[in-house]
Image 1 (tube, rainbow, N blue to C red):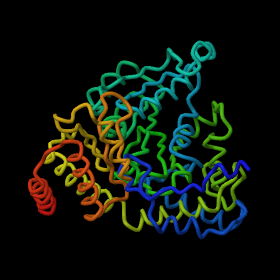
Image 2 (cartoon, rainbow, N blue to C red; image 1 turned 90 degrees about the vertical axis):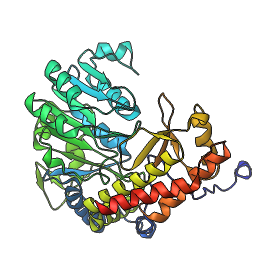
Image 3 (cartoon, rainbow, N blue to C red; image 1 turned 180 degrees about the horizontal axis):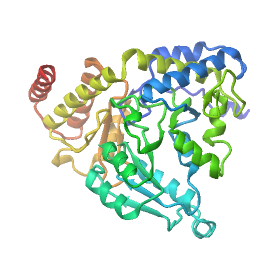
Image 4 (tube, rainbow, N blue to C red; image 1 turned 180 degrees about the vertical axis):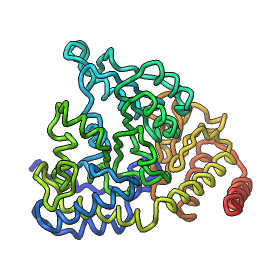
Length: 413
């Protein structure tokens, strides 16, 4: 029998210390596993969805009625967000890493004319889209934003908030202001910032649409719901011009969450089959986020990133990132060029760190839902052990000294 050729799949538990997916809280997994096999229109499933959208508004920091979850990963949420872009629309996209680069490709595909898409369907050269490429390891700054926004005057402007490909935080405040000044509608990839940074999207009126994911700052199962939020201005544009999608059309998606004609209603309209397991897990992850508090969680990320970076520097690494949930670094000089080998060596020990996915190759170490002294100590120990096994040389006492010094400095602030 062919079945005899395949053994039962057993996936070991690893220390997921990469850019994401993050470590799902055991209480979220428990809710997932304990959920009953319910019809997706069961009253308790619908109640869970209703409460999720209310909690999401608190997590996002918004009064946007069109705030809900798109079934799938962050790419599903991002696809819904850019669904309002039509062929020929003037679009300005700021790119400073792998993922904002893929977002820009998606925008070029949406804005491409039939002729442009036919010429190169997988990588269209859309004349109406201007992509501003910021060098790897640099943030999108106010000067860069203002220069290109003032010159191009786009209908849509795009930027990632936190770019996980390079570990950089981009200037969302200046981006919003530039959108307002130039009457542009801002679109923001918040996949890596929601649930990590301390911000409220209503403080950025130039941004009309936001998209995130479940498996990073929200710390839920990867295949649940991608949080999105749309201002009324965006929805009005979508209503007036439509979108060439049914599955990820925000208006249709919102109806299933009980959001119709800009209002919350008691009963939603069917759009897709929702999983009771996914609803239960997503609901619990949002409860835990609000229970801990966005500001408290953000402060923990800031603290532990500083401690982790201090330890890596003491080991001779060069830290080039400024995100709080992710450290991007170059290995010590004697190990330069061996970053991929180092990552694979760590993975062989069930220590799940990542390389960057674009040149130059660097090492990425994340702390998603690893916000404890014990977890940070484990990451540092595993990293240091792997470094020495490949020929690195550093003083363990100096690492401890720098960590303690940083911890004392943070406590004094």
